[in-house]
Image (cartoon, rainbow over all chains, first blue to last red; front, top):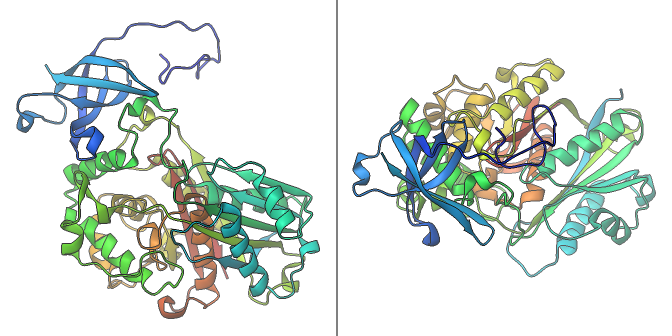
Length: 91
Length: 371
């Protein structure tokens, strides 16, 4: 599995690459609150099951319930201009 | 391999200005030539420029501006550790025998596009470095009970030290209370936990062992070098409480210099954020893992007589013109080892260390220097 995306494999250097869909469930490794104007809200480091880590927004009704190690699910992802974005919710 | 030493240096006041990149860089080169009277333009074999600016052909332009026609002229960029990367390149040219005399010029403007790693999709829309700093801070607080007050003490010390450094951008002390009440950016990181971009330049003259005494009676020897790039993406930062690139780079530098961490008298470490200095205490081997916060408590007055860290004010007190930082750190260590650091002089320095890192500590450089 190659992440971030590349046209060559970092292990074997092959260029025979294809896109695969990964499980959208992951573990919340750490989290905090951003107060930067365009990023307001909770965010965290989420590790997906294929050892892919992402910094994404965490959306939930009660942020007091967030805990390190809890399982979350990606509910949204895409591109806004040049920036990717990822949004997660607790499972 | 030839030994290599620092023969001289130049520095500008770190500031915000309308001056161009070239004006600021040339100012530091002018200062260097003023400080090393026996140096003339035709002596110089290499001009290496460290900057993250979008400008082109910077090394050749600065060579022309200063009347130098070097064999080697090029630019080095590696985000925040560009400066030490450039120093190591210069060291390598001299140690290999390709050159005898090299000038390294680090320069940056405050609005340089240098701090965010745009390539890394992993960081999503959270590319501002304060986000990774917050993750490191939270993890260290969680695992080792490091406190916001301990992180604040790093800022207090570095702001205080900066008031003794005429080149520093910030010239005002802050209290722990000031830091804790400063504007929150990404919890727990607040404004005074962060370094700030600014304009600035630093120049360093490196010379071979064969020719060093033509330029100085007090050479500062480059004794150890270590570099490591463990990854570039945040996805591959596997530990949030440890800077693996720093650990590995320091190991190589200490081994080359044949010294141990406890022998370092003075160190300039990369406090892009206060948590980075706390991690640096641990990962450079000054204290055991997890005790960086406790070390910050004693570092303010150096109660234990241990290594003096960031005597010029670090990045937080001096400002962080990205391409200039690593070179300015080396200038400070050279000044300390030559007993020229004025009010902030550490007594009886024999060994110094420069630590410079980039992009959530995915790469690092450690250089040891000695007299």
